[in-house]
Amino acid sequence: MPMPVVRPADTADAADRAVLDRLWLMFRHDMSEFQGGLPNPDGTFRSDRLAAALTDPDRLAYLLTSDDHPAGFAIVRGLDQPTRVLNSFFVVRGVRRRGVGLAAVREVVQRHPGAWEVAFQEANAGAVRFWRRVATALAGRRWTEERRAVPGRPDLAPDVWIRFDVAPVG
Image (cartoon, rainbow, N blue to C red; front, side):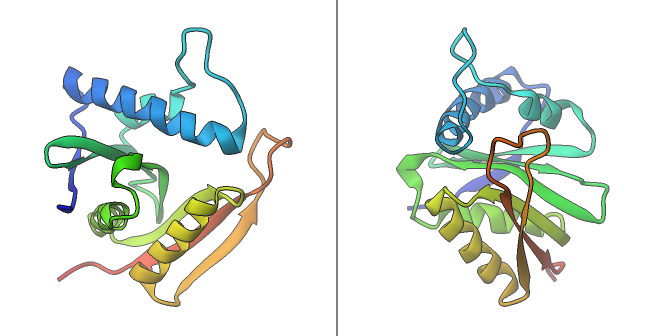
């Protein structure tokens, strides 16, 4: 399995937007298992975070491809902040557990060295294993984990937040 190509999404390119929109539907469908909720009446899911990633200068969306096929995305927020947040991350099921996700996260965070945070749901066992493995691969034992309430969602269990630092390459 070739490692993914990671590139910033072109916010002016209708093709990039269409791919992100479709991947977003898959991502939100996966997340609905852990966060509850149904699609909107038109079959879409809430996409305000995706829209912000394409318009907010403090955010950046990355597309992941494998063999020229869409393989996922990463959305970073806090580009101008001391700590960046991997706001949303998704890898299509067909390439999961093959090193694609770890390689993609590694490339994204190395493009923005410094402090990083990522949140996930404790009920999502795959995410728990993945993000702890990512933190260890990128920071060794130098990472922390804490639970934080989900803003405006007292009905949800707290998110798990992992924090780690990535040194500049070179």
